[in-house]
Length: 462
Ligand SMILES: *[C@@H]1O[C@H](CO)[C@@H](O)[C@H](O)[C@H]1NC(C)=O
Ligand SMILES: *[C@@H]1O[C@H](CO)[C@@H](O)[C@H](O)[C@H]1NC(C)=O
Ligand SMILES: *[C@@H]1O[C@H](CO)[C@@H](O)[C@H](O)[C@H]1NC(C)=O
Ligand SMILES: *[C@@H]1O[C@H](CO)[C@@H](O)[C@H](O)[C@H]1NC(C)=O
Image 1: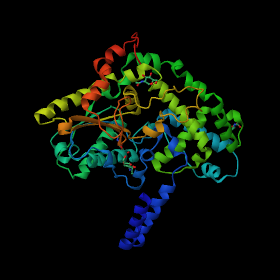
Image 2 (image 1 turned 90 degrees about the horizontal axis):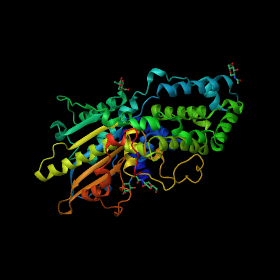
Image 3 (image 1 turned 45 degrees about the vertical axis):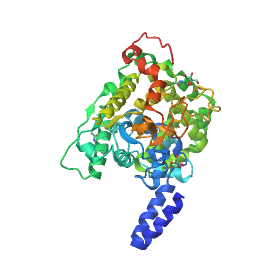
Image 4 (image 1 turned 90 degrees about the vertical axis):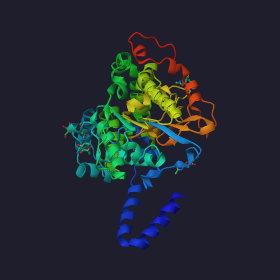
């Protein structure tokens, strides 16, 4: 269907502007086929476009078919957004340098991809890049802003923005501040606004709660044994096979390729693609099976450090959870009086901000936990960060006034409607806001950040 439309477009294009447009189309379709075959396994280093492939054809396309009908009016939107595509952090750059040197000096073979790495590819990543937002990341957020204005035209509107009804809150990290500015620029460029500036609030207590939760820091973040399952998997049989296959492809002794090196080379493939849109020769070091193993290692880490592994991981987001619901409550009660002061809240943070909150809300909760020994049985797991936590990942909570049908709350993850886990709702129906509050009653009455994050607090429920 989409392909047909695209072909028609090409023909029309050709008739209208002839050869020059054909060139553009040629490069467009080239870039489509330029996607590494393993691009769906990059975990949190993946492109937003792999999660929503229709964006590859049209980055501003939206799918409104699952939004409620015209009887419902948008009242409020809270968006929790991860920053856009970024450079690697200095820690990863060091590892990438090491694997590059090894391939440069110790590998041999006639494969064209290997010669390309050795003769043409340059190690251009430097430590001072330190996780900064890249140009693609600027566009991730600009485009997201435009799509949101198309999805929710009465909320993400010029009038609401100019009237001060759109609030921006961000983590203090430069990639997040830059993402916030990029989102704003997406809107000001869309509406040609040049006579007004918009501010933002930096709030790390809210967007980097994980740094302020003592129990999380002590029990998980600074506790090496918390990631025992990850370490075991990285030394286990699946990973060993991956490192051996890489060593074979490079014609080096098995002992030279560690799991760390395999991961660094995997990151090189991922970064070259997400930052520069290139299917780099580094990607040839992996087949799909290798990539799935590396993806599992990354998911395991997220699971134990930010997800269901330990209850404090998600409890550390209690402060954000309450913040979100108090905004929704406020909008709900203001709506009764006629005017909602804060129509839209854009909150920009990290993968580490979103994942604990999604976990607290119960999303992607498999019946079996992810461990070092159940890679095979977890092949169909829902906890697959490649599928839901790319750059610019976003959780949207949209409050609707449906007249006689009441106030309703729709969650969208990466612009796709979701069902609150465990709520008995028909797939297509949007739940009543009151039913959502009832569903999360226990958290709304408890989940106190100060209490949960006390060092000796015992978790009574998970
Ligand atoms: C848009 O949403 C509808 C309804 O869920 C779905 O069937 C369709 O595949 C979506 N279209 C795209 C391009 O994702
Ligand atoms: C890898 O290459 C470097 C530079 O040529 C050399 O010094 C080193 O001994 C080699 N390592 C192995 C294990 O062959
Ligand atoms: C924001 O991103 C742009 C584009 O990469 C870059 O030029 C600029 O230096 C960045 N600013 C900050 C504060 O990181
Ligand atoms: C996740 O699933 C487990 C096992 O099915 C269950 O005990 C737990 O309550 C769930 N957690 C959440 C937050 O829904």
